[in-house]
Image 1 (cartoon, helix red, strand yellow):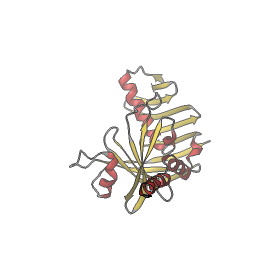
Image 2: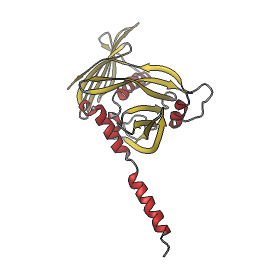
Image 3: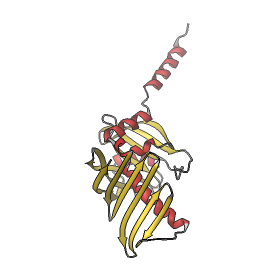
Image 4: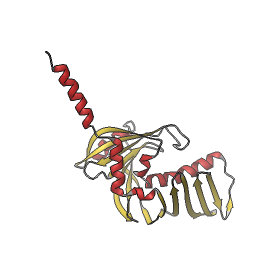
Amino acid sequence: MNRLPYLILLAFILSGCNKPDARKIVDKSIAFYNMDKLSNATLEFKFRTAGFKVMQNGGQFKYERFFSDSTGNVHDILSNEGFKRILNGKELQLDQKESDKYRQSLNAVVYFLYLPLKLNDASVVKKYLGESKIKGKTFYKIEISFEKSKEAGDHSDVFYYWFDTKDYSMDHFAYSSGGNRFREVLRTHEAGGVIFQDYVNYQMPLDDSVTTVDKYDSLFEAGKLRELSRIELKNIVVNE
């Protein structure tokens, strides 16, 4: 009896059983940052020249941004009811292009702040891609895409995340929305028992516009990415 086909099938099954589960990796990363505390909490912080107040409670949410510019005092509000901009106490009548621009910029700040918690949103599709080495550390590499839904926004976006295989910290991620970007953790903050992160934000090399962002870990390892900006949070307060 030729047992070779049976052994090959058994090896294939066992290799599938040992494959890390993307959902479990994300769950362990959320636990590492203690981010479940943000599911029903109000968060206040400052980013660059703006102050933010973010509320999430079950399916209800309200994101607010406050800043002043040459036009006066601006108050942006994004909630389940939509987006509105208030200037000097009066709501502005925005066209769709303006509304989408302001809404997306506000939502992006909050989305990245709430990572990796946001990776368990209902519209998220997780895919394990294997292991990757960056600066001598081994990471689980996960692809994140989105099902088409009203809540998901631009469902064509695809993100890539690198989770430390030892403690499940989310040390890097990459995306192409608004240009190819790769982020590296700069420092961490603790507020209300939750760990938040600042990042160095990198862009594509001057001599390489063809490498896709899923391979930016290799470009980063080779020192080819260019620093674009720093994402740094100030005065973080968590109110449960």
